[in-house]
Length: 104
Image (tube, rainbow, N blue to C red; front, side, top):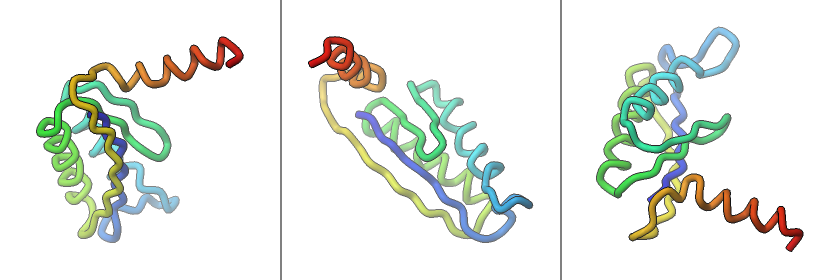
């Protein structure tokens, strides 16, 4: 499965001097990177691939890392649950790129 998730801290020390929340978000990204699972981080979401239990455990740990910076955390999560398929984090994009390259 692939999940796309975003964590938003609210209140506490989560807000940087410029209004950003990069310190709290960085704490979550550290958890994701330490997991060893395939992942990508973009400006709006982090994508994570693995089986249900391991992915959800990382999302929970990332939320807890953000919660260390803020008394309230919002979570947006979208999942592509497709048993028997792996390496889809890159595979899905590669298939679209093939179509773009073929002019179809």
